[in-house]
Image (cartoon, rainbow, N blue to C red; front, side, top):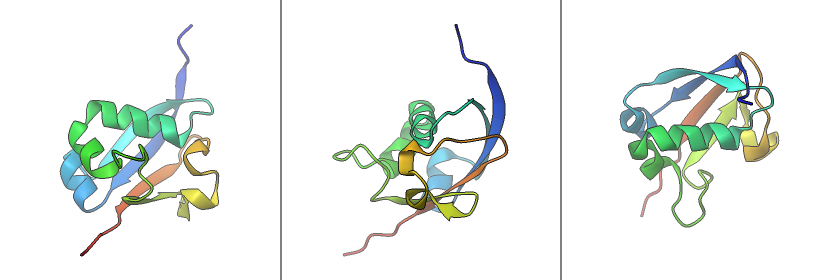
Length: 100
């Protein structure tokens, strides 16, 4: 049975993430108790350009490349990638600038 997608979250992309995705915002329907990890997997499947700049290829996680806010709180202060999303959540992807 296919899960019912009844909740909607808003995703916002800043900096290089906006350029890679091609837009600064997206509304996305999510299933009950869907986790941040699942949203990121869905996004990166439909946007290979976003995956290149968001997900670290060795670690398989966005942690070294992004600060992710959920309703203004850093995701790692909640439950990280395992944070369950609910209707009307706002997720913001902020790039971390690495220099050398």
